[in-house]
Image (tube, rainbow, N blue to C red):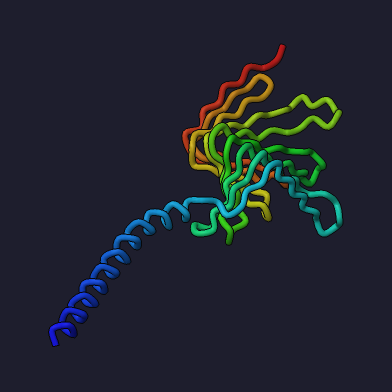
Length: 189
């Protein structure tokens, strides 16, 4: 009879030891899963994407030096992203930044750090070239509309303007400045 109790006691101790080991290993695995959620499931170097219009003509080109996709948060991060687009008049515009991101369920790219919007010279001499700079910008891929609520600086031949907030319709070449607009104009002589 004593052997049965001894065997039962040993089995109980062994079972408790297994439960303790299981709890210990679960605690170790939890930070690992958090770390995995912050890891990209894929990445790419030199990303290129072409978007053609209904008429079959090239409408937009998207490039990035690198892209990383994070599935648990549903975001793709881009390094050195650049969108090149053609407006209704045939003028080519370029949006560049140091970083960018795109949510999986949206068609809006968020550009961050040293964002620049500028027309690209297509061989023709342009006298009205303008450079628009800000620190963060959203760009709707379908509508080709860029927007920000941050400080915007625009420089062109003989002029400099600053404002807080902007909406730019690239297709129509129409810009709306929101608040605090200050302009300096020096006519060329």
